[in-house]
Length: 94
Ligand code: SF4
Image (tube, rainbow, N blue to C red; front, side, top):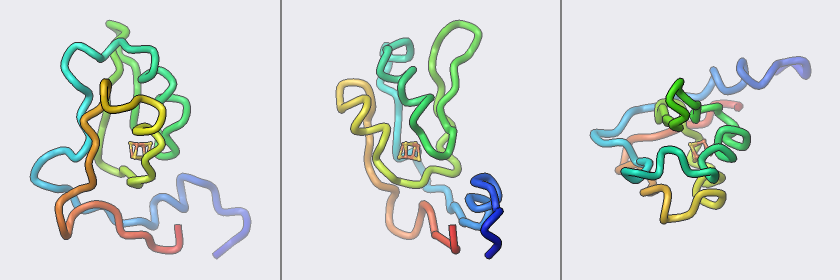
């Protein structure tokens, strides 16, 4: 693997198998919580974004299961669990 390979290219090597249900959910009513704005900054896969209404949205496909958002947001904001067996990320030199 090239030393100059960028983060997006490295993440592109991983395989993500979606589960039947999202393994991380923003709890209803918490979409504008400031902790989620921090998650936008720290999620290494860039899965959190803010929409035009100022609400934070999560796209779960590509989740690295690192737990960073769980630590930043806590259980009050996120319903966080690992994907069911056989689903989720498979690391491939990423
Ligand atoms: S577990 Fe990691 S990769 Fe997945 S959404 Fe949270 S911060 Fe992003």
